[in-house]
Length: 391
Image (cartoon, rainbow, N blue to C red; front, side, top):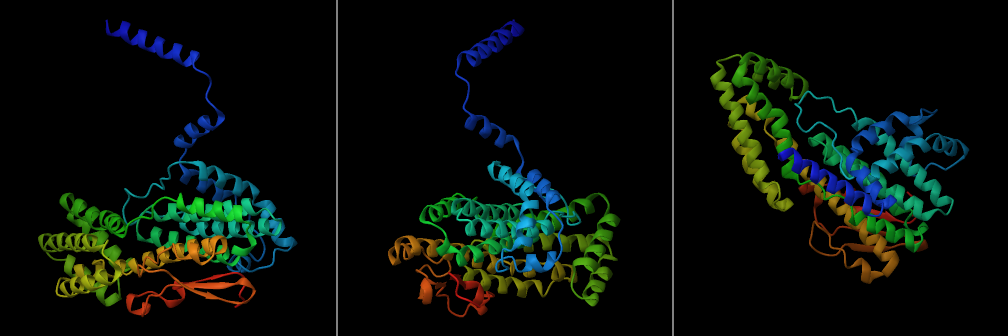
């Protein structure tokens, strides 16, 4: 009976499929995009990138180096790479495969990502010179998307590299803002609005805790010697000074019950920082100082691996949010004047940004945040230059 019902249902589904009109190419592409992991395509693009003379010099000066015949040749050799990235843009999900690993997992994609981002910015600059504004806008937006996907792909190092990738695109985008036609500017705004939500800092800490502390605790339950060996290795490779590392080694040489209890307190240290991760930056730093005082009285294991240093990446996340908002405000200013500019609010102050007009239609946008250094933010991170303003 069950087989008969199953056969009838399958037959009915087949009839419906045959009677319905065939799907559009866009619909078929959407289905394919759901099946493709963007990370796989990005890795494919890494392998397609060309090697070329003066590579370090050219990539370091990617935002200002003249687009001469040598650069054009490099870009010609990179077209297969750019085509693969375009396919990655269309993919609806991106999994780098490191979220469920441990602290020793080699994250192989961070280095090539920087080269790819700079090559793409060179391509965007070339397209602008060829009056292909729309194509240039899409390339720049692709770099922002790549950065956002790197941020969400793993632990703290991924966040920091992803933020750096976004910054790689933001500065030449701002410098070239006047070179875009209005349609391309609107394309940029649309694609920026469509970017995946930036990862929360508490989520980053949770990943760090899982790959470091939770991993060690799980091992210690079954094999304390293996856990001890891993702690010693981490202390020497990623810890502080040799003296501090030796203190941790001495500590874990004692009875397992003692240092496993320290691991549990270390786990709680991470959870405590996760709990304050979404606070406004000033409040976050104040609460973090209180937690640091608690950790300073604990064992060497807790002092070395407590997330105090990790937590200081939080200001980087805030300054990145500020930079993205400044770019948004600057593009709106060129489209709608000061009325559009004032619609964008500085996430660090809750107020509009400061606007300084310069010669040749250039301008600066700056956060009104006072004394940024006290918040562990470099002042230069809070200014974005639009137009060709010189050094």
